[in-house]
Image (cartoon, rainbow, N blue to C red; front, side, top):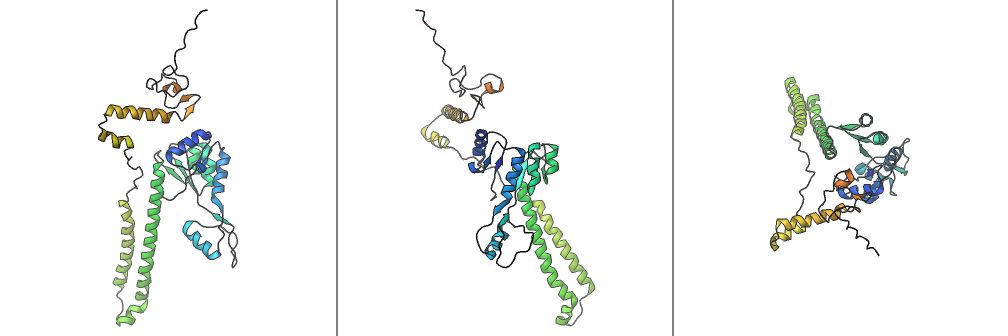
Length: 288
């Protein structure tokens, strides 16, 4: 949708970058180990960006396209604003996110989140799904475009109808315009705007999740006569290697040993540092 996404979290750097890598967030846009006040300060920093070094006319043209600027006093001729205000939306669900939600231009809270977060937010998602944020922004854009269309239609309709009703029709035809014609034309204007707004009932949410393309193994194994068992074994080795990247106190997040249960990894494939399935039995010491 052309939006730049940042991650503000109180988790450690390693966990934050691992999650950001999975969802496609740039590493330079990840701010980890931040306090609630730091989240609000980061949102305020993102809102205020320095204005580009261009002429006043070029800057105004640029601002009309991407953002707007705030100025307490009117600008003089040849003067350009030194600060551009960029609109920032914040998504959060906890008490720690409340200051940032209040600071952002658009605060979006998760429906299953804390009560104080929902009070500080401007929008509350009914379902606890982050994909609804994209749908909400897309729907609001569609509604705004429909409002613009209705406004332009009403403006053009009245720009033609008012002069005709004021006497232009009589000047052109020599006959007065019947009152019922003017009333019917005004009613048709309102009906057309309502019908145009009802077209939003046919709104379709954008397709967010794309179908996963088959990997290299899925494409070449059928041609080589590979079996499903071999494919599952190779995929298991791949998952074991990927899960070994994120460790908590020497244990993998996918291993049941981290959560107080028995190890559920395959024999010899557990990435944990100390595991009964991977550790070799110690050889007994020979007596002298």
